Length: 420
View (cartoon, rainbow, N blue to C red):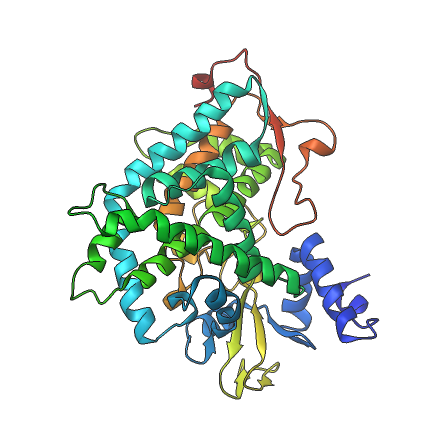
């Protein structure tokens, strides 16, 4: 049964939403392909789904008309008023600039080296098999948060806070009150820990370290920065929320795609070079197109509007309408990606929508662009890398919003240099 055919059998708003979520989790590419052809803008009771690339790009490029205000509910109670939910405001203008200043390009070689070292040590200690999600995919961004950002809380606390806040702020579909409550509780606990952690440095005569948190605290001491301590706390929380689960999903979902496609794996290995990484990295982001971290972004319509005006499928929407802007669908639209079903690592890097677009593009995208492919590279270098037999070798979300398990194996009798 096709998606639209099954949707037509739904007898209630809840049933319509359930059909959408089911297809989203089991066969999103087929669903989006059908919608692009037959119903490019689909209105169901809970949201309006936008699937063609031209319309997706149009919406993402207009943050005043199509806002991220829906994120304020989970964010504000958890971490305080957050600039990421306030596009084109004074708060966003000032604090986004400060956060870009503390996430420096000069850190990127250190980020890549840390990702390589973390993944390599896990592989060397594993003796031929491991669960790549906890041992590599989550471990790499965890170390980045602790050592590059300077948010040095214990592993278990960081992972718990990251999971609860990312789930509640961005993955709470269908909406669950307990998920929201857990998100807000995690945010409050995180802020309380940070106040204690950072209070010692605020009172110190000089600040030690060259991490993002220390840089941000140094700025907060300047009268020209206008960044009081509570704003430092909120933005440090944002570093964690936006890093661990998203980067973990990207690492493991790209790995899963290469294991599933030996020809892609061979092509990526053929470009692996210590001196130049761009060609190899391109293979990773092309693989992610087939299994993106998320296939849509929420936006709220701020004024009555007609979507896709001038087309045969133009659709009026009222202010307050929640949109699911399907970036995953757009990356399989021939209008954006010629020959979209083909794996092609030569596509222009800026044609991908993995990090969003425009004003609300991911703040830490440059860090992810080096850390994600480097972690995957260490896995793919293992000779004979493969999934283990049975269910343990399948990518497992464990009923939740993020990948939890993928057990892989490789041949320990062969040197990794032979696969480089």
